[in-house]
Length: 179
Ligand SMILES: Nc1nc2c(ncn2[C@@H]2O[C@H](COP(=O)(O)OP(=O)(O)OP(=O)(O)O)[C@@H](O)[C@H]2O)c(=O)[nH]1
Ligand SMILES: [Mg+2]
Image (cartoon, rainbow, N blue to C red; front, side, top):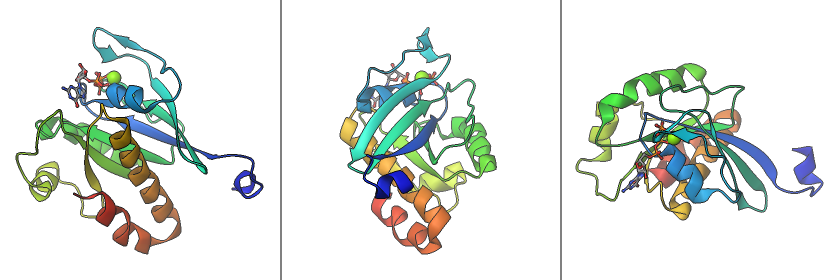
């Protein structure tokens, strides 16, 4: 980015959170955002978009858009997508995974632990979700800012790897984010 090389501040990135209703998208945006998140919930579910912002480091400021689980819409593109899933309910993930695959945007699957431990291996979950080996999966806690930040870093690594060097995709994000 030209602005970055001129030292004009952090590079803006756009990450969209998608996932079934109740998976933890709004929780994650609220946990990590440096600005008061726009509240668009009604009756416990998001009806418009969550919006937040987080500065990951001196070079990267992420604008977050949490889509309503009942009406996912990636709008005008993104640098990457975090698919937030409840690992106890893999069946609910199929429509959203299908949707994200079709956008061809880089994405990472974030399994929100809901205070639990995984009761099956990531390999089993990958199989249950029918997710390709190339797609990074990470376990995270939607209520913990540091955990959400790690998941966002994984998303941006995939975005960079997908557009610049396939080797990065294979060696970097998967190894770093797969627990
Ligand atoms: N205990 C616990 N509760 C959580 C966690 N993550 C989310 N929740 C709760 O689960 C409920 C749903 O979370 P939301 O973040 O609103 O889910 P969402 O993905 O935004 O759902 P929609 O807007 O309907 O698509 C809320 O009551 C959260 O407080 C978690 O890690 N642990
Ligand atoms: Mg929500």
